[in-house]
Image (tube, rainbow, N blue to C red):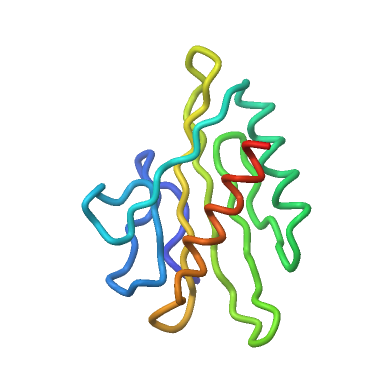
Length: 127
C-alpha cells in the first residue's frame, strides 16, 4: 500500500517522481498545488467533496472520516490507480481550508494528470 494518511496533521510527502501534487509541499517545490478553500461549515464542505467524488467516473472512496477523505481514481485504459486525499481544517469565519494530495501508485511521470484532476475537482467545488 502506498504512503497515505495523516500523521501529526500532515499528509505524506510526495516522492521525488513528478507524478504527485500536494498542497503541503513547499511553495517553491514542483509538487506544490494550492489548497482548496471553500465557504461553509466543515460538514457542508465535506459533503460537497463527497458529492463531487461520487459524480466522478471510476472513483471509489476508501476512507471517509470527519476531517479526511481518501479516494482511488482508476484510469480507463490501463487501470492505473491514483490516490487522492483531502485533509479538512477546522472551519474559521465560515471558511474551510482543504489540504490536497494526489499521487500515482506506479510509474514515474503522469503527464500532469494528478494536477489536472485536482484543478478539475477545485473547479467543480467552486460551482
